[in-house]
Length: 97
Length: 233
Image 1 (cartoon, rainbow over the protein chains, first blue to last red):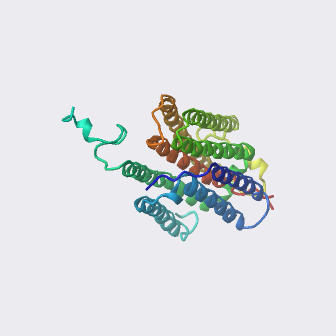
Image 2 (image 1 turned 180 degrees about the horizontal axis):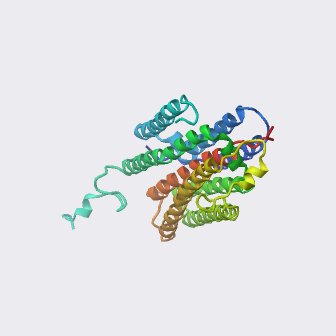
Image 3 (image 1 turned 135 degrees about the vertical axis):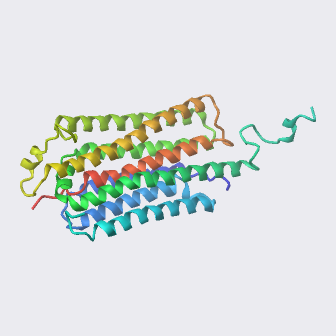
């Protein structure tokens, strides 16, 4: 891969987006959205994480397929851990786990 | 002169002999760091999993604990970390362009942001200490029981929330302290002029670590501070 130098404008743009999302998530938490409060908070957090991974960590511009495979695999492993554990505990009677 | 092994190389000393090209060396280093970060994801993942299971079972106590945290300080710390990620990203860029002074300034700014984060975290922990919210013999949740009469709070379950709070923010803070150490080392080398447009992999790799720690906080912030802030009915 030849090194890709991102423009500094791009970096500042991502930074502003991250700041705006931080303020939005802190404000939205006080509005009653029922069960959607948690979903909105996690969606915003995932958007922020994606911005950091793709641009600040240069994953969008890497041509190294192995790196991308490691990232996708590690997220997949994490999902195995979380989904299977919650599928177990979530279907037990509360207090008897 | 001609039989000197040096004469065989047409590149600088930064390229190790077991790599063919600088690009290959850079990709290998980056891949190695990502493999390490994969283990880190699973490391923190175990804690997030424990958090989710207990949050499911003891939701009331998690709500009360979450509301007792200072959302203002939490937001400020999130912003501080995002700013530090920006200075890291810009320092990688400055190194790619060979601007030595700018690299040093941006790395020092990163360290200052990192220390500011730890300072604010320390203030928050001290507040919890004063409120007797640190799990253990002197733990006391009576203030939460008084403040939130709408929900039933079991002090034993409340301790689980604060145990996870201190374990998760503590592990994150430990990563921040290590990060500050790494960046002090990088600053010293950058100041000595070790990094050039041809060779700046350590800054890129250190940056990956810093951004990862930032991402952990991006999830910790909503999960610990924003569980349920809306008016209790």
